[in-house]
Image 1 (cartoon, rainbow, N blue to C red):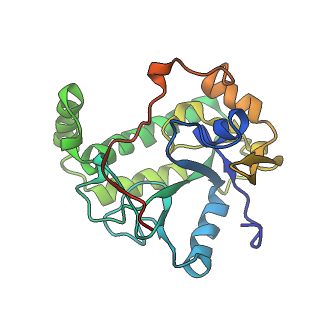
Image 2 (tube, helix red, strand yellow; image 1 turned 120 degrees about the vertical axis):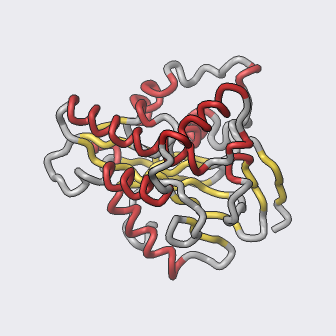
Image 3 (spheres, helix red, strand yellow; image 1 turned 180 degrees about the vertical axis):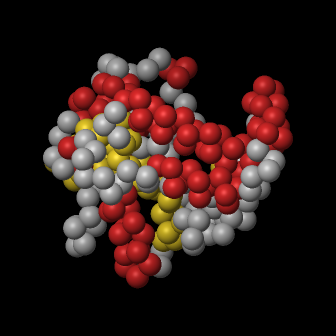
Length: 248
């Protein structure tokens, strides 16, 4: 990224881990990185030739049955098989999540309508794509209902429409805000575009990595009093695994 002038920021639990723990949150088991869409697209191209053979760059272009709206860098010859994806024939290695961030209209009403439109496609996409047997109770029932409602639409159609929706304003130079639509807490991840322009380095497990200078504002909006540890019963990973191996 440094070599090719590509910016990124640590995000989500990884950003919180960097600030509060100087590395991983002990019960968090992945790494989240955000990039503006232009950098994200450039990074995809660069990884085709510059990524070490030890790693696999996973997108819907490189892994036919992978339909998420964000990409992953996987470590080959390892296994981190999540229950929600275990029925798909994809690379299941340990990974870093790469989330694209897109511009949104300055009008709050238009931004809200854009998010609702995106959610319509994403609900159908995830309802049809994720392993229905990984759910139980009400969640499983809702997944069956979603599959019935969205039966006329293919997974590929829903993914393409969702991506078309969130990239609609990326060429608009007047936009002042961005949103990470494809992250787990999209409704909380609306920020001034300046967070990708004003960066500093912060320690994460002995590495000095990029974070927004405005990290305090970002973390407060998402976690509230983020320096306070959650109660012990809430300190759990959010990933359920069918298989795990780090033999690499």
